[in-house]
Length: 395
Image 1 (cartoon, rainbow, N blue to C red):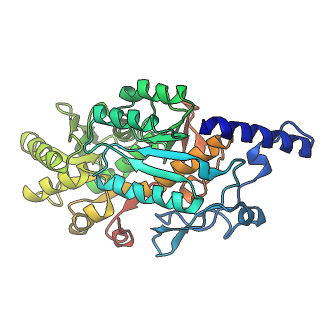
Image 2: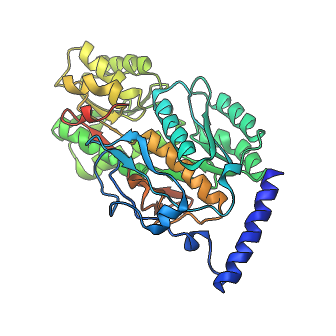
Image 3: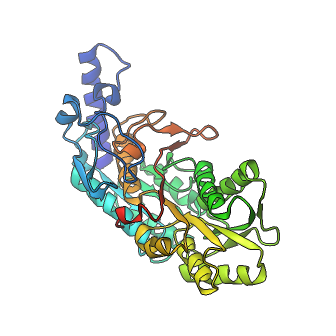
């Protein structure tokens, strides 16, 4: 019922807008242009444009400074007042369903979801299973789509497993946004970057550590995890393209950690004992990289075997400083959570998401449509943690 009332309000206001403008081509985005982006992303790597916002931004009543995030120089990350929705946004409910509610990555993501709710006055919250399990996640999604929500943002454990339940969500009129892997039934998939590009970025860091030669192994949480396998594929492709003396271990080119740091440690030890020629690891799960580093330390191979890959600052800090991890790559999950919610709100407001879309964060200020899949839009949000900058991050 709530969505029907909102739809009627939207239709009525759009009709008034068209009469007042004398054009049927104007949409909500054109009538309420986004303000200019201010500040820097969490990594401090890219500028978001001119400081401050224009008069339209001030009048919109949207978000302010996103104080939950801290940039490398210690300043709060600036977030745009994106637009003024046509309907009363306080009537909307957005649910974010993650892979594992206890994982530190998603604890950080929830900070962004909560900050969005505070900034926009919209009921947005996060849910997830107690473990990284596809079947459990489907149960959480089923529960959420029966709660009279307006949009659902999903970070799928296994995109294919989510297909049926997300179609059910769409049949109920719920907007569906995915992140870290697109189900066939997502309305749109928001990614922090090109998956192939992120994998290549990890490989560039590993190649530097290995002196551009030697045997390496890629590790993923599960062989069914779409995004992590795409990152690993991107790393392998980059090695073949740019580093001819780097060789993916033929006998065991890709191993699984089950998204568990202890398991990553055990698997890495087994690989290193069985294949002493291995000199490097690509870790894709945030659990992989610290687990592999522990194995390197225990076997006395620090400085001889190297790992680069996804990792959280607080979990990798001391391992980076000791040299067990050459560098850790990531994007800020809190920014991703915030950005998904902004995108959901824009979709509920009838706006079109595409090339150049600005979600109000520097990492997501000029979205790019994926060349191979127009349903995927990508930002530019990756960060590399090394000895000289890891202390700038606290999450």
